[in-house]
Length: 316
Image 1 (cartoon, rainbow, N blue to C red):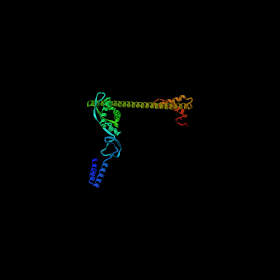
Image 2: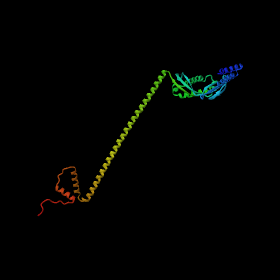
Image 3: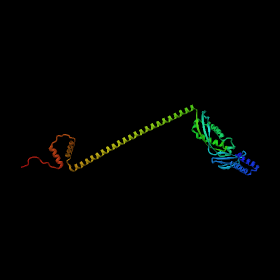
């Protein structure tokens, strides 16, 4: 762009020498405008601009419009948004001497654009290499089972180590995510069998617990049923006892009334009362006795206080 702006200026100088001043002035102004406008640079909100003059750091420009001297100054735009570095899969030997293929990603953000350019050759490449080394060191101190179960711990330890080691790079490690930890096929198959056996064991224990619970419920139901039968028998027995008590009380009342009537109406006639009672009992039981009708009539009449009328012909 500078050359494009210098050409009209050189032509203007030649025209001035040829005394074509008006055309020379126009070309000179055109050249200056081209050079001036070629120095404008735009920095987006997601970037920061590092400006150098003759290869030396000059200043850092925030988002917006800026102007630099063309060809004398140069601006590098640095992305300051969150970025991701994919860690290529690698084989890691765990603490229990097993090989595992591990893959991870690192999320980071540039905080110091000047340091990210001048303190490290290529911060992305350096970060990826450091992450691979750190990942091997962290998982190498863990068993394969622990590595699979404690991925969050691995992520936290990786983040802490990388953030500390890359502090001079001008970047901040935001988080580390383990994508996969895969053992060899034969080890994976053995692990699947172990997991299946554990699941079957848990299922068997659950079935045993359910059976025990069902048996306990049935036992409790039988106990409740037996208690209900027992309570019913008790209530039935109490009802019968109460009935017997009522009947006995009634019989006692009856005897009392009979005794009171006997003392009131049959005083001195106990023999006649006994005969009436015997007769009453015989009639209830449908017993057959040979008795003198005249005497029975006399006894009944005497007990009722009635004098029997003799049947026969009236006296003339």
